[in-house]
Amino acid sequence: MGMDENNLGTCPVDRGLMRVGDRWSMLVLRDIERGLTRYEQLRTSLGIAPNILSRRLSALAEAGLIAKNRYSERPPRDEYLLTEAGRDFLPILMAIGAWGRKYNGVGALSRHRDAATGEIVRPVVVDANTGAPIGSRPLRLEYPD
Amino acid sequence: MGMDENNLGTCPVDRGLMRVGDRWSMLVLRDIERGLTRYEQLRTSLGIAPNILSRRLSALAEAGLIAKNRYSERPPRDEYLLTEAGRDFLPILMAIGAWGRKYNGVGALSRHRDAATGEIVRPVVVDANTGAPIGSRPLRLEYPD
DNA sequence: TCGGGTCGCTTGCAAAATGATAGTTACTTC
DNA sequence: GAAGTAACTATCATTTTGCAAGCGACCCGA
Image 1 (cartoon, each protein chain N blue to C red):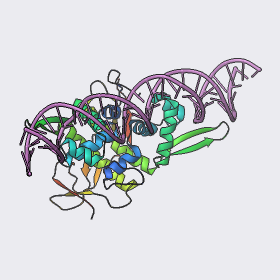
Image 2: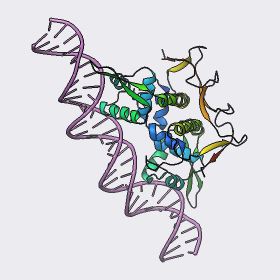
Image 3: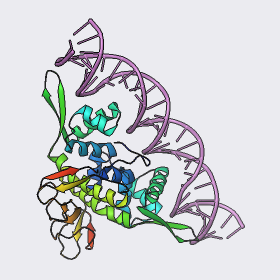
Image 4: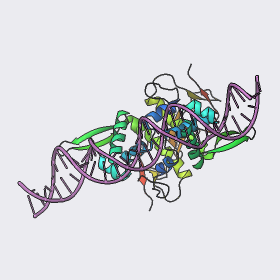
């Protein structure tokens, strides 16, 4: 494998990573979810170079994870909003966050709390069929055809 | 944010991405899980340049996700095995795969089947406390101190 | 109306990462 | 001893990233 747009492989992981497989893209999604929807907010929050941010935003828009929205003509002001695909990616970021906390979590870290129960959220990937955490049951990998 | 090893931020997502935040690293983990544990197997499966593969393997080993194991002295033969941290990352790859299938899934893709039930695995990220999928309940982000 | 100041970028250039290709070491097998 | 395989390293071109400066559109205060 090691595919491009024209030569797609059969691995869904690869397909996902084609669209978001870099650090900045994921951090941009995270920040947009936090409410940092404007260019300058993202730039200062991430400490990213402006040209790089521009490119990441275009790539994410092209990949369909965010959409650029001009909410003021005069003065010209834009915001970047998550699309459905972008929102659907957020749980993955939560899972990465849980992993990061576990294996690289020295010092104090931010966290999510369930607004209703008040408990700290503990993201886990499960199989929706069984409810069992992935890794707790043996799986078989199948190839198409 | 935009942190390095010495200047850690408070975001667990960033902490996770510091360790694995690139495409090749994730694909290497995926292939090792598939049983492609040797250098040549990884290289041909991924179609990656040998110098790049070497660097990724060192980085993953340094980050504690894989361990290099010499299983034969004569002839010298090595394999790369997942550590606990590496295995713990696999569910995230499954979640990325599910997302990739949904949003970039044209054509036939490989999939996992539960060995016991025979059903196709459907990975979802849930809150272990409530069992509810992340995104289905309102959350509050909290910062330390 | 003139001089800052902010926002949302682009441009130019340097530095770092990635990738293609060739070569190396250590061994086995014919 | 010739050829082959596994696991790399070395060299160099290409690509991507990143820094710093600048630019157009506008707003705001004097």
